[in-house]
Every structure is written in C-alpha cells, then in structure tokens.
Picture 1 (cartoon, rainbow, N blue to C red):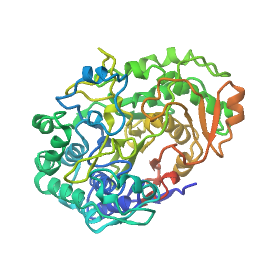
Picture 2: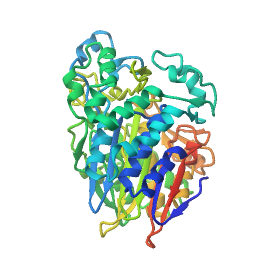
Picture 3: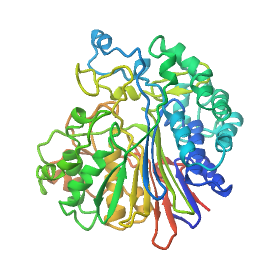
Picture 4: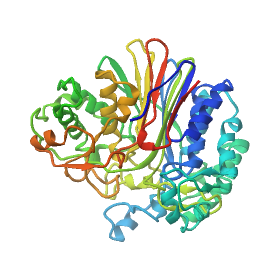
Length: 510
C-alpha cells in the first residue's frame, strides 16, 4: 500500500520519482501546475519509453477557475487505405511492426498547446531536466529494465541495446536532440526537422509533408456529470472518458453498499461498467456524442443480485502513463500520455530513436463504420484523464490511470472510494481492484464476455462467483493500471498518492 503525502504549496504525482522531482523543481522556480506537468511529462517521455513518449499521444484537463480539455491525439496519414488492409485479409488493424497503425504523434503538439495557454516559464526551462536525463543517462526502472533486452534488438532501438536489468544506465541522445529542437525551434523544428524527416521515410507513403504540418492539438469542451455531491469531468470522444461518467451515473442510482469490502459493492461497480460500455465498439468515434443521457435505461438492465446477460466491455492491459499536478494557487492539471501497447508499434523513428505508438489499432476496418481507418481521422482512444470539482466550482481532485480499455473501470473504483467512501488517496489508489477480463492486446477487448479479474488481496472473489461472475484471481500489480491522485482538502492542504503498482512512482510536494 502506498502512503498519502501532504503539502501546502504544490504537489506533483507521477509514475517515476525523477519526473515528479522535475515538476516540483518548476514549482520552486515560480512555475504553476502547467509548468510542473510539462516538465514531468517530458522526463517521462525520456525515462518511460515503455509507457509514453514523443512518439505517442496526449490528453489533458486543466482547472484554472474553469475546466478546459485538451485533445492532442494524432491523425492517420494521407496514405491511409482501409481497402488495402482488407485486401490483405485483415479484419482488424495490425497491432505491431506496421506503420499503418501509427497516426502522426500528437504528444509534442499537446505540450506546445498547454505551454502556450497556461505556462509561465520558458519551454526550454521546462524541457531541461528531460534533456539532462536523456543526455547524461538515467537508471532503467524495474518495469523498463526487463523489457529493454528484447527491444534493444529492434531497428532504431540502439539506446536499449546494452540494457539488461533494472538500474542499468540508459542514454537517449536522439531524444535529447529532438527535445532541444522543440525547445529552440518550436513545432516546425520537431515535426519538419530530424524526427519528421525520419517519420516520412519510415512511412513509405503513409504520411505527407502536409500531414506533419497540421497541428494535432485541439482545445475541446470537456464532459461533466454531477455525482456523489461533486462534479466529475473528463475528455470527450474520441476519448472513452464518457464510460467513466456513464458508469458513475448508473452506479449512483443503484445505491452501492457502504463498505467497499462487500462483494455486493464490487458486483454493482462491475455491472455499471458493463452496462456503460457494452456497445463501445459501435458508438465511439471522433465525432461521437457521448451517450450520457442513456444512464437510466442502462441502469434498468442491471440486476442488483446477479450478473446480467449483457454483451460485455472487457479489458486488458495497456501501457500509458498518467500524471497530475496542483500548485499553491489551486490550479490543477490532469494529464495522460501514451504509446498504446508497451513500446507502442515496436517501430522506431530512425533518426532520433523515438519509439512510435500504435494508437491506430483503435480504428475499425468495417466499411462505413464511423471509426473506419482513413486519411486525417483520429482513432477511438482509451485515454481518459479525470478531474473533480466541488459544487462551488473549486478544484477537489485530479486523478487518472494507465490501463488500456480498463481505465474507466479503474477510475470508477478510485472515484467511488474517494467521493462516496471518504478514503484517503493512498487507500483509493492502493486498494486491490477488479477489471473486466478479455481479449489479447488490451485494445481489442470489447468483443467478448469473459468475466472478471480480481487482484489478490481483494475480498470479493467468492461473492462475485455467487452472483454469477466468472472470476480469475491475478497477482497484485499485474495489469491493473497505475492510478495517481491529488486531493485538495477543505483545509487547503494537498493530499496525494502515487500508485504502488508503478514501483518507483512518487507524490512529491513543496
């Protein structure tokens, strides 16, 4: 179990203590929560390539008196051709080693948009810690070290060729050059510079120069609901964040037990998630209207005592990293950036060694589907940061998690523990979890109905089986996400916790 940390003048919470420290350093220099989040995000792009990076995408929520939402997810290139993939006999997007599942990465555009609207400090200052780690080296984390041995054998992945175990020094000089170019020359120096040139060459016609010239960051209208005496916010489609809000609305009307250890508690949350998400594959696309008004009808499908015969919305693991920051003035940032699965596509831009995401696996290959793979389109996205405000509009909490399709399910548990049961951040993020089970990749798993996975130490397995759920028990920390949370207490104190499943995460304050 993690510990709740407390601070008065600002806090940063991430999956890597090096990133958290970089964020707090910016607060100490007079920066705000946006500065802290950007510095932390940049460090994670260097030290956590198995979860995120400049070759991936980003979503964020910002509270600065009002709530704003940022969608920095990339678009498929002009060469996107679904008919060609279907002619190859494919029913789904290729998962690995195929550039067609690599939309133009949006992460750098997201950083620039967040910096332009909210930051105080120069971008070069915010990227300096990340450049230092990329140039001078950093220790491979317990989650990076064991995987780098294989990754180091891939084309363009020479940064990891000598990494064998936790603690080995990793240097990423190409990433340092890309960060320096972004800091000194802005967007064009990155997307039309060394990285962009390499992406065009690797793409072999998937992208054009115009594709790379088109910014991928948009400020969009956030989604919100009122539940448990608060307002909960997330990002709209193409994000799947609506699943969190819809499940919370379903759950609130069911009256969950007062004790989260009660198997009936887990049953109602599981059924709320299933009812919210069973049709996700058909309804989530970039121009979708979130079906929040269907909560009552979906709630009627839930049997309080038995597993309902619904199509399920199961989930498996994904690799992403979430971070949050709050400053002494009460500004909060909830930010998530991702490669999709692990190192993403396992393709590396050849000039800089930046590994490229595979968010294109969210596209459909069904002709005429609203999420069909095609030029300039954004795929359905698992990323869904969250933010909570009080009835008077002031910030209550920032939170989010990695976890692929399971992200809304994990956040459903964390939000309910925090707001309904009054648990501390450490209790809310560290307690054992359940998740809907199914699929092979973590991103194609809304197609089957395979029951529930429960972490070891959870008290619900037998009770869920009695209610008709197929249940598997899995070791604590295995593919159940890394959730982080900062809570603003009525006293003005900040209380935060990093997920112990991240192993080297840290909630640091000032």
